[in-house]
Amino acid sequence: MTTLLEPRRSAVGSLDTSFTIAGRDFRSRLMVGTGKYASNDIMVRAIEASGAEIVTVAVRRVNLDRRQEEGILHHLDPSQFFLLANTAGCYNADDAVRYARLARAAGFNEWVKLEVIGDKETLLPDTVGLLEATRILAAEGFKVMAYSNDDLVTALRLQDAGAVAVMPLASPIGSGLGLLNEFSIRTIKHRLSVPVVVDAGVGTASDACLTMEQGVDGILMNTALASASDPVRMAAAMRSAVDAGRLAYLAGRMPRREVAVPSSPTEGLIE
Image 1 (cartoon, rainbow, N blue to C red):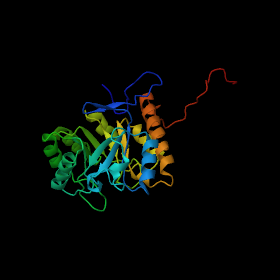
Image 2: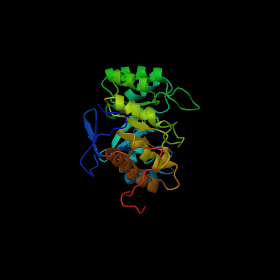
Image 3: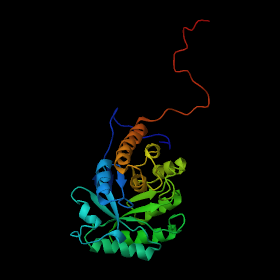
Image 4: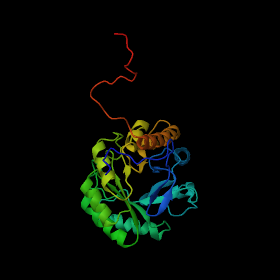
């Protein structure tokens, strides 16, 4: 029986960069958003530097006419990136379901990153609305990746409702506070059978590394890249940090101790 602190072992030095959601394999464990960039050119260069395969796009921001230069889809090649529509900005289940249906009708795939926000100040999820929307969309064949708080019970209910991945926050959206509750994230990952992707709150590379060390399957971020002084460099840093955190998790950290333990042999010391 594994414990929360026991990682899955792999071959020495290997990095299992691919993972599977709803039967589809993905190469990168770093997923990125498309909001808040100073320009579309910087956004594209940052996304490329991140190595991300999954790129989320808010349905309400999309100009569905790809011929329009100003439309965000004009700058993202669907043969290069897996475009994941999201329901950002929705404050009830009805709106979230409507946006997901709109995205699919407009040519997006059946995948959706589901957000139902419950509070305008903290942007924390409305768990009741989130569960309701997940059940409806899953029944309609959508592959729902649900943004959630870091609560185990909610995560289990989302999984039971049909979510193909659960996305607990590290800290509030756009806060950059980093991972606030390592225990909750480890517990959710330990108990769920669907992939766990931490969404929101990661602020810099060390946050990303620490988050991945909890054993989660991936991280989704946006503001940490778009609001960096140099988004392209930060994207490259995040890419390395996600890999480093994953590798450290697979390697297994040393036990924490409250006493010093010498690293050199103690035999043969001069008395």
